[in-house]
Length: 270
Length: 66
Image 1 (tube, one colour):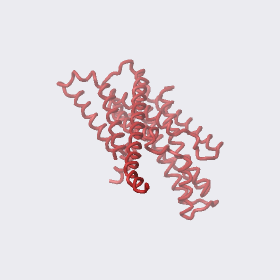
Image 2 (cartoon, rainbow over the protein chains, first blue to last red):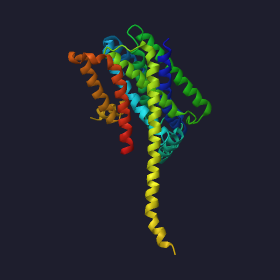
Image 3 (cartoon, helix red, strand yellow):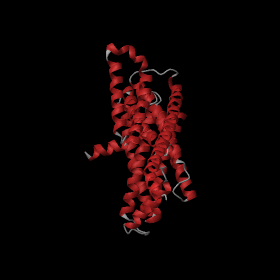
Image 4 (tube, rainbow over the protein chains, first blue to last red):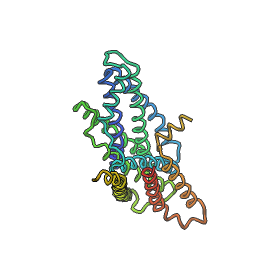
């Protein structure tokens, strides 16, 4: 069992499961649970086929160094995308990801289409559930294959198993949590989760991309937490910088408002 | 074209990040495959970490400017 891989896959997959589950929940509540679950199960079956074929092909026929490089680059791209969003949200320049708001918005959209809660299969409900689960599930499959396959040649199979276990546990926990609270999982601090995952993806991506070029890191795999610490510190500095920038912008805006309103105020003075 | 755009949005969705990472990888490829640049190979890891941070800063800077 590769615990680092399993943990990374668990955290990354949990984010995707929360997003997918929100849509499944919306469809179940507003249209019906039959359509919602049919879409979700159909997407899960499609995903299983993709993972079974693509996973094996990737591990068997692609040289590990090339694969590490390709995966490393993709993980850096993924990681930077998530990290950027999380940093912008922490600095207050972007609204926090609000699952409850998404829930309300989607419910309103469905009701605007004239869809109501009905006991029979509704194609729109099935398609909506299928599309969301497939999209988020593809990201989970991607995480499992990339995380699992890139650790080393000998442990690749074990790595995929560890990543799959991490993702499965995340899925079970999210579904169980959703079933218990029966709400759109707004309690999950998604931005924190996304921030941690962004750090992990970027750290793993950096590690593997450099190894793909034949570079050997000092301390080998133990350097990954050091990379994570470097990115964490850099993110903290960036959040502070963006907060300062926002404060300066607000101060400048209020100063501009004050200077433009001064002549008017002077004009009304007796 | 739609498929390419969908893949782009799925993986990165940000041109600064994409171009920055591509340039970084090209530079690292040059360092690692051109004999004259071989003394720099030892710095591959450091160059990559610095480049990733520069790309992150650049995309955040563009975000607050745009």
